[in-house]
Length: 271
Image (cartoon, rainbow, N blue to C red):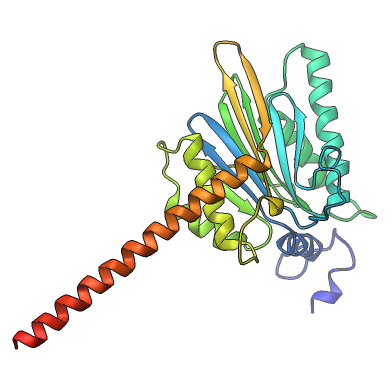
């Protein structure tokens, strides 16, 4: 039935569905995951790297996370070639606003302008939806730290923590349980990102080569925003801390089980 209504992005099915948009979302669900966490003193973006060839030059190549301007950074999940076109448009939107008003563009302004373009590609003939979802992290003087997500349909929304891409539903379930609204600091967000990826990535052991993490912070004294990619040494430290915590929890669990078993045995002997 779907094949009768999926030949154009502009055709609605009798159920009111746009199949081309759903196909774009399906393509995103098979791509590397992107994770965003909003903290009280910063924002964290993390991405799963699928192409981990040792021949890649990390200085010139970034698979997941891109800087738009001094106050805005984004992570992509989906078709990278589609993302490159939209990232260039994001940068142009920001620069046009800066040239016109002589101040950085509000984060939501840039996100909404790009989503207008994405929505147009679901409404006009001869085009297909962009097969990419974005997570945006930024800071502006209007709303402070912000985290947004947008999808191929042109919808966008603000989030405290979210994930798109492969195993995103599992990641969101973990975030719902672990994220503490109003209490999460930047270090907590980093540990939570490592925890989520360790449980959702299709790998037996999490390594720095398989993820990349960016941190955004704003200094009120200097009025400067910094966006920093974590180095492999920092990622290794975070992963080791998580593994040590898990090992300690497992040891405590086994000790408790042994104590419970011993107590049960003593009670049986008394009877």
